[in-house]
Length: 144
Image 1 (cartoon, rainbow, N blue to C red):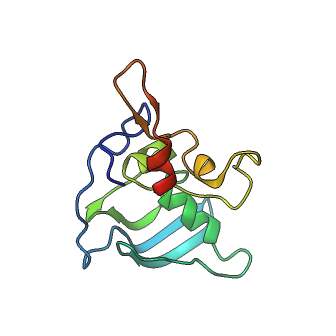
Image 2 (cartoon, rainbow, N blue to C red):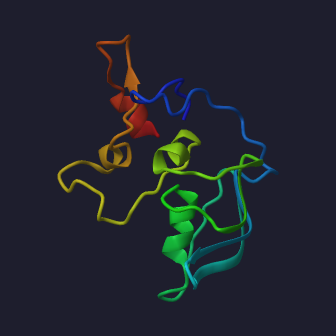
């Protein structure tokens, strides 16, 4: 994205050219426990700019837990979580979104009658124009 602002929250204030050699998201020996139940243990993950990453595993392997940690729905209970090289501990999905991390769910969180690009930006629509008459920036959302 090249916008200076998105939506009413200003989640993306300014884009910078990513360092292709540095991960944008990194987990080091990350884990998550729910009481005595250990859902994840020792997860190491690096996601680099422009990289497509797939999370595969058997039922109960911890895929959903991993995504929930990265997207701010849950906090890790062990290890480190870094975004752009800085340690983070998100308390909410909004905090993750403010760092440029969003989860695109398969189908549960979509509006069937809206096109894909509208569903993708649902709740964080890109806008243009001066406040208080800001309008949706449809072309930027479609291009993104």
